[in-house]
Amino acid sequence: MKKLILSGIILIGLAFTAQAQEISKNALGLRLGDNGGFGTEITYQRALGGNNRLELDLGWRNRKNFNHNGYDDDAIKLAGLYQWVMNIDSGFNWYVGVGGGLGTYSYNNNNEHFNDTFAFAAGDIGIEYNFDIPLLISLDFRPEFGGNGYYKNNYGSDIAVGIKYQF
Image (cartoon, rainbow, N blue to C red; front, side, top):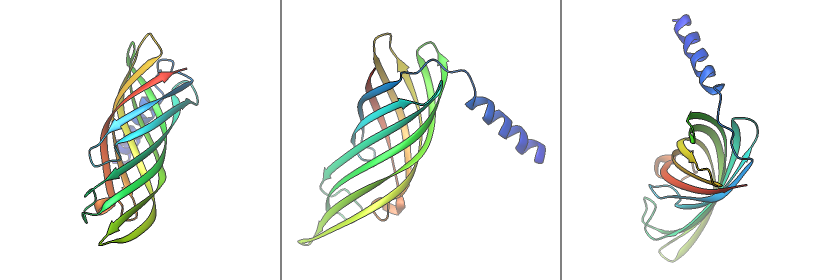
């Protein structure tokens, strides 16, 4: 059993050290999703090395009847993710990431106004295409855990399409 666990750890380590295509030093754009997540986010990526980067996302929402209690709510959140980028084929990469964030929300319930803040842990897995022009498109899945009551059962996730300008 110990050999099996050790072999698994070695394989995961090799996957994270695989040679990646050169990633852009900076990228700025939008992340558009809405599968129980936050919806539109402004996204910024900063390369930290040959195949690692930091992604920061600022999201907001103004929704009626979103949460499980059926209240009208407004929210804003900031997420930060450390990502490992691995090359699939020329222009195509896949990536995984881990991180977290903070947010605040307010809602009305029977003419009473409530405010609260929340923290969460997040993961990220996705695929991206790096065009010959300074354009990057991506598709990813992000589960988020925590939320201090903002997410139903303290879990939220979404699938999003991203479009970023690289510089």
